[in-house]
Image 1 (cartoon, rainbow, N blue to C red):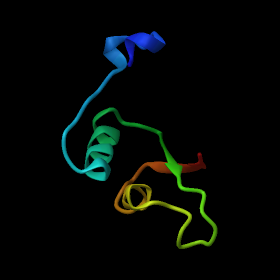
Image 2: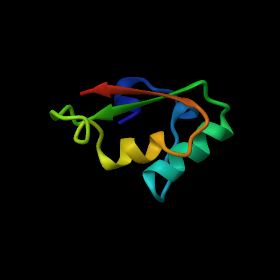
Image 3: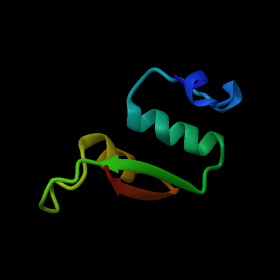
Length: 69
């Protein structure tokens, strides 16, 4: 998929594990300034974020931007 979109191999990272845990780990590893996650976009505050996006928000020191997809 990366090659199809001309994304260099050096920018590709594949991890196995809990998505939120791996996102937290990678954010710390690369000293990220911002994590961007997609949301379900359903109505209501409780339904705004999916379980992965919600888990990313909790326990991370980096700013998180949730985007309705």
